[in-house]
Length: 297
Image (cartoon, rainbow, N blue to C red; front, top):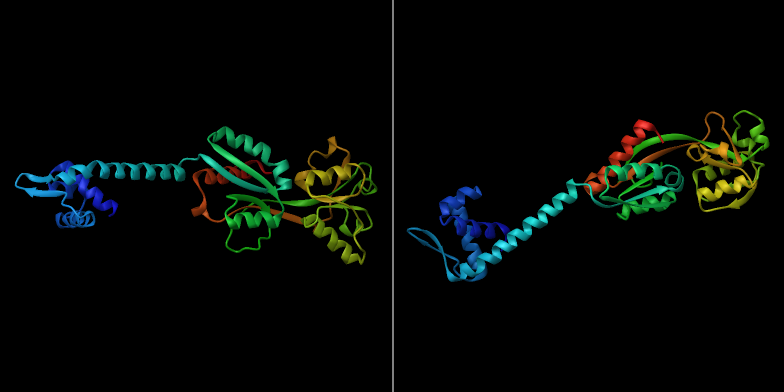
């Protein structure tokens, strides 16, 4: 039994004539007859008899008709609901982000997005690069804001912005008093505050290796805000994305530019492909891209 058979039966019951019903359904009369015969064979009863005045329902047909109509109505309702899911932004959308992005960029973006799409519930999570990429690949996350490179070639990445890395040092530090950009090789003797696995940490480790010295790690932390606060307390210096250092004048640390050719990061919006995105996810993706293109991070 299939929906074409049910529609054929319901249409004939409504019109009373096979020729009219076939025209309404956009099929030939022999094709309509085959659908009806297949349905009757499936049910094991006669549903209709032909008379000179048209098609007449049998007792079995009268009993079956309400059920057929309810089944078609339920199918139509389900189809409409799925249509809304793919065309109307509503419901939950999961967005992952690097900690630096989640803390310093997303609050304002999400506020503006919610004012435009109040029926969408953003579900936000922060994490490190590898965990975010795994979350997108598994379908746990709909969208993700992270940095390049990506390990998986089956993911779609759209560039959002590129930014330099800057040194964050305690207020009044000697590197800040130089009043000039510094090379990372000038930092290798300093105590370092790091997040293991972070791109800034890798760059500092590479600079130490280039000078043949072992990194002087003073503190390891697992989040960007903790890293910045450790610097404020004078425990060491850190290499951070410029996004995190915007409000340094109001805090107890200074920002030192890195010389030309220093480390940078490319930030991208990642997903599995348009076919995997709900209307809510597509709306959030477009909003993020358009907002950052217009105003920057």
